[in-house]
Image (cartoon, rainbow, N blue to C red; front, top):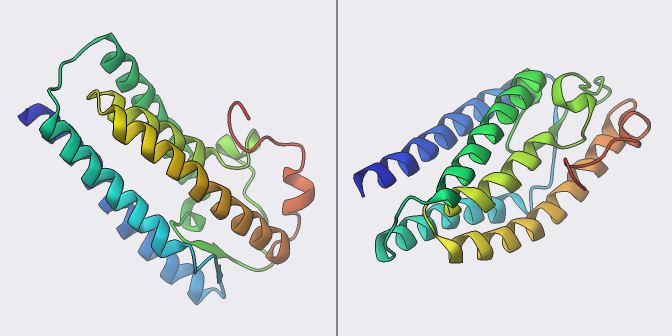
Length: 184
């Protein structure tokens, strides 16, 4: 059980490091004239992600965890997602944030995974919410939060794409032909 809690703790620490990085990027972007959009849904998104980890911890505590083939497959998918996450975050650099902050008239980032997809980091989030719980047979968390995450991303992506279209030079034309996610 210590191993399970340890793995979840590593993921939580990674998220906290990302929040700190996002805060630094937010300060820089706002100092450059960045405009924030989607403020209304942001607290709900944070609550969703906090609830995800609480649910995961509760479920792994009350349900016996055994490592099966599904655990290994889920782990490999989560590991793959981390590679994509690092690629996406490093491609955006100081423009990456957990909030929707757009620098007016800035060129749209089209390097890294953004050459292929509009939202590679959301692809990562989709994979993580679905497969982190499956590493530990936390099926209720996987199902409930995959559904809630789909709803949240439908709200968030509309707000983000509207802000990018309104505030940047060529988002709509540059990303029109690109898929939002890997398979969709």
